[in-house]
Image 1 (cartoon, rainbow, N blue to C red):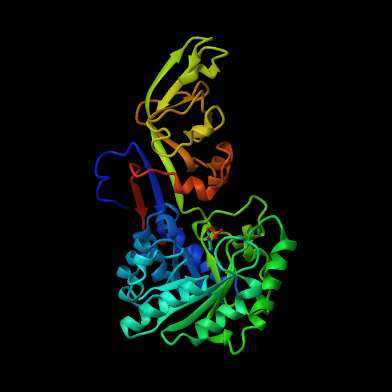
Image 2: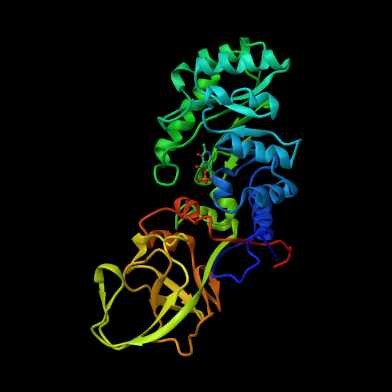
Length: 384
Ligand SMILES: Cc1ncc(COP(=O)(O)O)c(C=O)c1O
């Protein structure tokens, strides 16, 4: 196990990142797909809170073909880790960021004619072509050229002397709960590509499927790459996902420790706003973590934690640095005991999906909400 440099002090609240599980997950996902499908690893937002450097280094070692990020600083960090890997920026660039495409050899997403002109100018100035992925909006209403206008934008890219088309892609709006609309998006995408004269799909990345999309990815089709974020971290996009059959395992767990325990009389009200009243004499444990660490306040009075493998309910409001749980039924709890917020303990488990549900949010947001003061502890060894 290795720790980040600032986590040499005893741990109060920490995230454990199992890089060996990440590697196994990538290999399992790849094995579940036809062999020609390339793997775009989505590592934006600090690799979904798992830590960009450690995650990307492990994914490079495990066989990712391309890294997709949101921001220029994420892209440059990936580039510095591996000069040979293609890196795709999924978000739009600001004009003053354009020149870094050449400097760091990055691929840009193109949605507009204005971007074509800007990136072509960067390639001209640098004396070598800039790689671009044409994004087609098939119904997400976010980035990309509207599918009916994609052939015109494709032609502009093809005519630009200092651009190299490295990929075409789209993004699904509701792949987890609207298969009919997902199918319609695939149809629009393929219809738009069919109208792009001279495009050679075999030579470029053709991608649409995020984790949920994999459930409905057609067998024989021009799609030759997937763009996976959540699933590689071992989290299913929704509880009934068919992807459970891939058997990925969670990479992330979230832990804290007991600060004090005490026994309070029946009728005591707990925490700010007095939203919980003890209905009996109770033993409570005050945990060393709160919303300042990433336990959402919305989980007040709803979440549970594991102590000694037993589920203990959160009482009252989560506060910035402490959370109060009922340990009346768990004998012998004491200062320093490990508490699982997300993860496994003594045969019991709280999944990230369950934790997110208590806070009325989604796993993606939960992972992005674990704060900077939480050290990430990396497990690196392979094995089971
Ligand atoms: C454009 C794009 N592609 C792929 C992904 C990966 O999605 P998922 O984490 O569901 O696999 C995302 C995630 O937000 C995205 O914005």
